[in-house]
Amino acid sequence: MDKYILPKKKAIGVFFVFAFGYFLSCLLRAITATLSPILTSEFNLLAADLGLLAGGYFLGFACMQIPLGYLLDKYGPKKIVSSFLLIALIGTSSFALAQSFSGLLISRILIGVGVSACLMAPLTGYRIWFAENQQQRANSWMLMIASLGFLSSTLPVQLLLPSFGWRWIFGGIAALILVSIILMLAFIPKWDHQKDESLKDQIKQGSLADVWKNKFFISVIPMGLFNYGGLMAIQTLWAGPWMIRVAGYTPLESATGLFWINITMLISFFLWGYFLPKITNLGFSALKILKLGLPISFFVMLIIILIGPKAGAFYITLFILSSIFLSVTQPAVGLSFPSYLAGKALTSFNLLIFLGTFIMQWLMGLVIDLIKNFGYSEILGFKSAFSVFLIFSLISYIFFLIINKKK
Image (cartoon, rainbow, N blue to C red; front, side, top):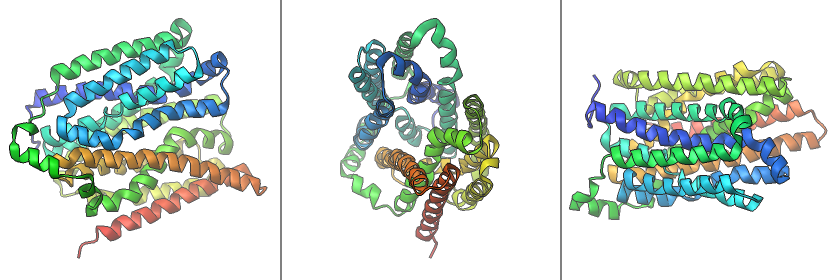
C-alpha cells in the first residue's frame, strides 16, 4: 500500500516543480554537443577549446557538491535551489551575450554552479517530505526527466537553430530558469528543521566525516566512481564513438541511435519508478536489488566486448538498460543516514559520480590511444577500454558485497 507524508496532490506538485528545474539543468548539460559546430565556426575554437568549454559545466558543478551538502542540511531545498538558480540565470544570460571564448567559458562555469542543486535539493527534500516507499520512485522519475532533458538538447535544439539562432535559444532557456525560480518559491514547502532546537544541535554536530565513515557509504564509493561513473562515461561520450568506429555506423546513424537510446531510457525510468515501490514492498531492498541486478549489466558488457563490431545501438541500449539497477544507489545512500545528514550524504555520493565520470572518460580514452600506439586496431582499443571498465566494475561490485556481507 502506498504511503504519503505530504498530501498526495501537494507531493505531485512538488515533484513537477523540482522536475522542471532538473530538466533545464540536463538540457544545459548536453546542449554544447549540439551547438559545437556553430560555436566552433563563430569563435574559431580548437578541439581542446570545445572540450574545456563542455567541461566547464562539470567543473562548476563538482566544486559545489560538498558545500552544497552543508547548505541543504541547514537552509533546506527551497532557499538553496532558488538562490543557486539565480546564478544559473546569470550564467545562461551571459552565455547568450558572450563575445569571446573566455566569456563562454566563464558563463559555462556559472551555469554549472547554478544548476548544481537541481537534483540534490529534490532528493534532500524527498528524504523529509516523501514516505520511504515513494523516494525510490521519485528518484527514478527524476532520472527519467534527465533523459528528457538530454533528448531535448539534440533534435529539438537542432530544429530551432535555423529560425532563432543559438543566442536566442539561450535567452529562452534563461526565461525558463526565471519561471522555475518563481515556481520553486511558490510551491516548495518551507524547511522546518530549524524550528526544532534538538535538530539544530544535530545539524551542527553532524559532520562530513560521519558520512564518509559510514559502512554502507564506504561500500558504494568504488561503485559510484567506476560502475556509475563508467555508465555515465559511456552514455554521455563513448557510446557514439563506439557505434561509429567499431560498429561502422555513419554519424547520422550514430546520432539516431543515441536519440533512441535516450527515448528507451526515458520510458524505462518511468516504468522502473512506477514498479519500484511495489518491488520493495515484496521485500526487495536496495541492497538486494543491487546484488541481484548488477551482474546482468556485467554479462551484457561482456557480450558487447566479445562480439565487437556486431554490437550496435541495440546492445549499447541493452547495457544502459540493464544498468538501471544502479539508480537505487543514490536514494539508498540518503536513507542510510538521519535526515539532518541527508544533504551531505547525497552530495558526497553525487561528487563520486561526477568525479568517476571524468576519470572513466579520461581512462577509457587513454586505453584506446595506448592500444593504437602499440600498432593495434582501434577496434581492439575500444574493446580493451570497455574491458578495463568491466574489470573495475566487477572489483567494485565484489567490494560492495564483502562490506555488506551479513555476519
